[in-house]
Length: 407
Ligand code: ZN
Ligand code: ZN
Image 1 (cartoon, rainbow, N blue to C red):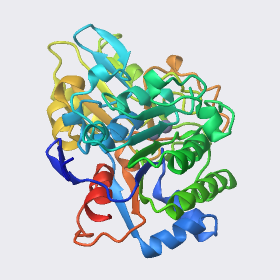
Image 2: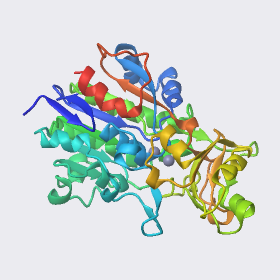
Image 3: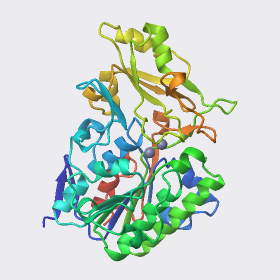
């Protein structure tokens, strides 16, 4: 067994203590601030004082898959290839989900750690992420969503429900994330993996603003499980895939720029193809509305003139050409459109008004995707000697901090 590991041009030391990296989906830092200030997170309050509390930047588009894959590869989407939950596959001319590991262009640190002889466990809330995170990884890997369907061959574990002692949670519930933490604690008790990655879902954050009862009770739950992992001697690094913001006008209705409608007006009906990388099968809580879109334009379009026209629209934060977006956000050029459009903090982008079903929204829209959701916590329950804490951090530095500085 070697004591150093090189993955995607970064070097990591092997863990000495069990190491847990937690990705709290949609954890805008203010959730923690509000919960800590009101006494809802006693473990975190102590950890912020005694460990290391940083604010980092996530990957844009600030969506779940690109960021989870960045965290486990230690690299941006230009390296690992996952730039959304959903993409337009130019090769086949179809719009597809990006859940299949065939889209992944880089190895994960999790797989490399397992190959080097470490025991590794991964628990995700939704099953859509499981195959990407567990790609080519020997070890335990399962989702809360399908915790009743695990097999030794596919997941490296059987009888998860017996281990955790909780029923299979609903995919639209806070329980889906609680199951991740509960499973993490039981795995640490029974199997004591060398490295564990826990990734929740942002169902609660889409519905509840920082400081509200719904948010605080979620974070109190999380705090209790993290305290248990800490008490077992784990190094814990906590970060988020992205933040979360209210996306409503003063009347409480979603503030939406319908981009397909805009392009139909601007260059002709059906000429442009608007792709929303937030799209996934579970859209009830956000109506597939986020702050990031990419647009494919027909041959011969004056891309720069079109870009400039859209950039001048109220509510757009920045509109970039493919090359500009690839450079600024470190995205793979072959998987984004001619234009990338990012809307402002309170505004989301959609396709056509007729294509978004907002009937499932039972609370004012909260969503993500933009630059305005880029700030995320990066917290380690240890001091980090030798690290310059004044430099810029990314959420995908989590394993670097946990393995190279916190042990
Ligand atoms: Zn997310
Ligand atoms: Zn979300």
